[in-house]
Image (tube, rainbow, N blue to C red):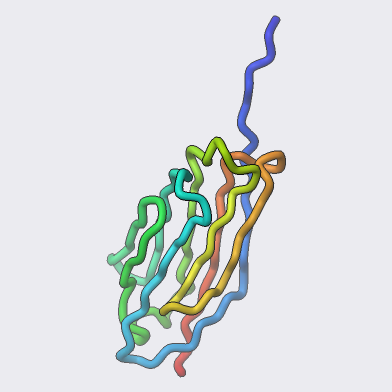
Length: 124
């Protein structure tokens, strides 16, 4: 009987993140992979009905500061097809151009990681 090659899935959580922002400022979320070959999907759940998605690397406006205060915003990335040439899966998360999380995990730990960021946007 042969063993099936099962990819390891692991969830990495970054909790209690905070990014102060003024009421009328637009808030941008950017996901930037350090490898050009990773394939992933990022879902951004904001308060209200205006959730956003980013495929692979990219940037999205997720709303105004005043509209993001009522609940926590969750940013969830699922890596589906990691780069075959890299030993690690690495990505940076930015809000309004400022680095908030730099994630890096070896493929031996998880080839298909799920990265979860929980962010509050208090008033600046």
